[in-house]
Image (cartoon, rainbow, N blue to C red; front, side, top):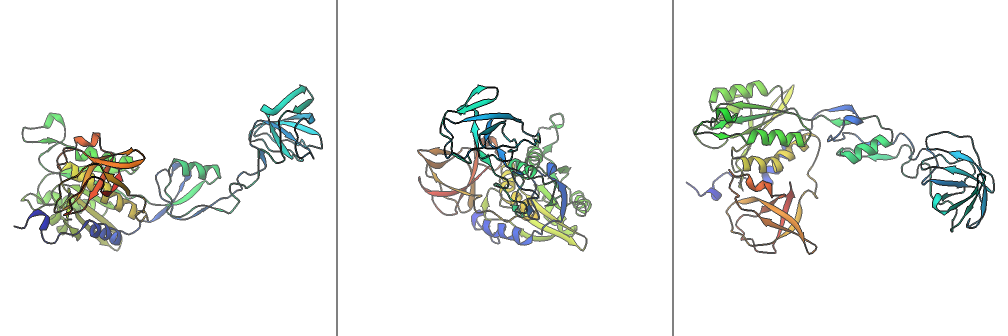
Amino acid sequence: MSACGHEKDLISIDEAIQSILNTAKKLSTETIFVKNSLSRYLSAPVYSPVNLPGFDQSAVDGYALCTSHADAQHQSYVLMGEIRAGVASDLALQEGQAIRIFTGGKLPQGTTTIARQEIVEVVSDTQIRITDPLMAHTDIRRRGEELAEGQSLAEAGQFINIGSLAALSMAGVQTISVFRQPKVAVVITGDEIALDQNSLSEAQVFDANGPLLKAWFQQNAIQAEIIHVSDQSQAVTACFEQLKSKYDLIITTGGVSVGDYDFVRPSSFDAGFEQIFWKVKQKPGKPLYFAQYQNPEHHCYLLGLPGNPAAVYVCMQVYGKLLIDALQGQQPKTDTWFTAKLTHGMKEDKRERFIRMQASIVKGELKVSSLAKQQSHMLSNLMQANCLVRIPAEVKPEAEMLVSGLFI
């Protein structure tokens, strides 16, 4: 048998990534309310329906003045009234007059500048005086200075985070067109997995993959159904038959290698799936499996992850995220991976590796340090890890070597 790193038919990490991108088809689009759009991707550009601001307004609490003086310092003004934010007013200014105004208040006609309250001396109920230098047009927010009506506010593909949701809301956008999120089923295989502590036998382990993947999808604002299936060929095939027409994506853990009880791949064939690739020259996660099922009415993808939890975690961060994004019209972004320096040397390996590491700033430079317990069945170092670092195959890394990393 070939050594693990030289096994035939292994594809590279980059080939696996490209295969996913070449295979995944965008899902349909839907129109939703902006208030419900967090963590979605725009499928069409958005243009501002209004001017921002919608009217000339004060940027501070102070006084609106009408003056022909280039510098209003030491000038006195007759106080004509008050304008609160959000309250319409017919008040107007003439030369030498002032109106008390608050942040966001609509400027009265005739305003030439705003005097913030800190530089205003209140002489009487009807008179104020400016104590500091004050130029024309100070502290005025002009109509449309941020956005003009019809101006592009967001492009197709924009990810809606808290900030972009707020920006859309501030512009009065009510609904947007987004890509539909995939319907996801997570299938946990393995008779060695105990569903709870009460059912744990001496030969079983606690389920880490189910909670891991449920939390992963929750973090990415996607609902996923978690299903456990026994290590029986008929059971796995029946599961795929039931899921393939209802879901856009099936994620499996375990059962993708070459053991006597690894039924995911052959059962997927029995259920009508077509293999895109199987086995990647990487560590952890070599037996990664990707397939698709398609008919005129529906398309379903299957991403088969190894059973070891560290491999599940790594493959979801790299390939699962890539596939989920591709289904929502996204291409990999060049700034997703960062560059950093290793703080130490490492052993070389025949396979390219994703190493759980800790990134930190040292004297102004981003550096990464490997953590102990990197075996694919171990997860405890995720308590300290904040990134995955990609280490090339058959290269002996040295201290200060530049490497690529992905924050997790």
